[in-house]
Image: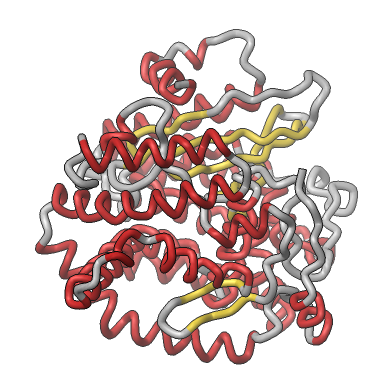
Length: 268
Length: 203
């Protein structure tokens, strides 16, 4: 179904300076510096603003804000679906826009998601290119904008050209909408961040990078990739190689399990 | 429509007793239901030690933590002594359970929708896809990879939004081993696990 079009740029770049840890990150030294910068900016500005926004904004208002921008985004998502020949999905995306813009009071209520058969999709221009066989290209850590692969930077053009806000000519309105959208999107990441902090071990930069690359790969294949993404040098970990069965772990289970059950009744 | 139907099935608990459901799907269904019940009944914060213990008790029998750890450690696994391997499994398990508890707590999970699995009776490897419905925001997928072992079907990898835990940890594990050796990794994991409760309680 998917055609392998030759992408000239990325294989050359990759072959030139592949690292053993990750083949998609030839610019790692630069990316790491930008990442450190982004983390500093986020910590100083964006995250406090998002926290404040969550604290002062009632939850229904936040939902309405998120729905409003989500409704604008559905135009882009629908177009991306059409560009992949996913006609049915694309049609439902535009159906969502029609429902939400009218019955949903200009997009403030996501009435379409309440109906069966009109779920929100996740599509963009990067996924369109991926669908037609374009490789992701090198991983980039963009200043302020965060992680992207070369292919997925096309997303910025897509958002720009397919956003209905392009037709608003009052720059103050456009800017404040952009700002609000940014803050809302950052606020949505707060629970993700909490999970990431619980999960992170060792190198945070690598953790973010590997997560991003795998997630994008999975999205291109709509959650069903034929093979897992090979990030670094091929590490053969066959079942024959790892003799897990020979390992006697029975003692371990016995130590941990009663401890858990013992503590639960004593806790308040 | 199928999703909707699935939700209703899950809510009424009919799905858990359906006879023709493949074993891996059944396992994920039962475990998800148990974890959800714990969450709703106990109403505990994810930082709570008791919540993690309860989740651990529910999740533990379905997971093959030995294999999960072995895959995450990758090529260095064979170089580790049995004692080192046991220590790695123990510490990694603590980290994973904590992550899992935080993930379902922080995202305010409302429901877990397990999708039907199509597989042959002879298959020894299966992927069970689930969709996690949250109070806020879009539902997100969690996929479980299971292997048929002597003790029945066991989960050996979990992918959240297509991000495999095994793959993700392999990078940082290998970096740590290259720098400080296997004992260095064990020590780093122990430190990491010890640091977490202090941080959450200080909040």
